[in-house]
Length: 91
Image 1 (cartoon, helix red, strand yellow):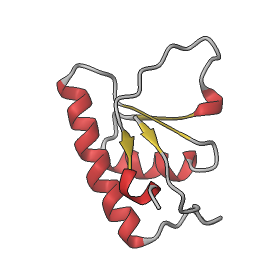
Image 2: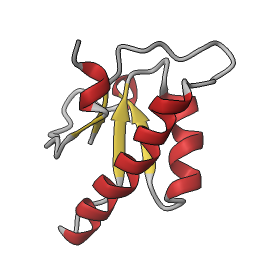
Image 3: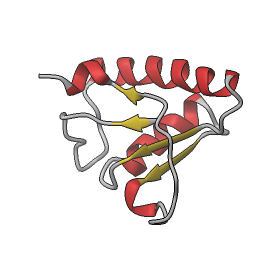
Image 4: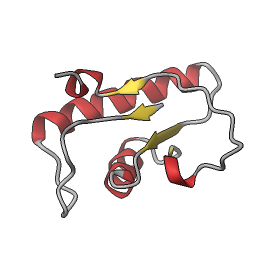
């Protein structure tokens, strides 16, 4: 699952409240869908958002993993199931 947002994450890690509500709802839904398919609960994001997103995801689903694109090995073969906050990412 890929997290993408045009809204920047503040230096202190704060996120706009409406985006946070959307994120919490979508993370739960998408991780449930991944679990139903027998897939590992992994969220991939940009390196700047990783720490903030990991803190949020761990509160929602402690067993989930959040990785930055830069942490993935170059030879990794990934299949992206969905994109979080698609609504927030579109202009």
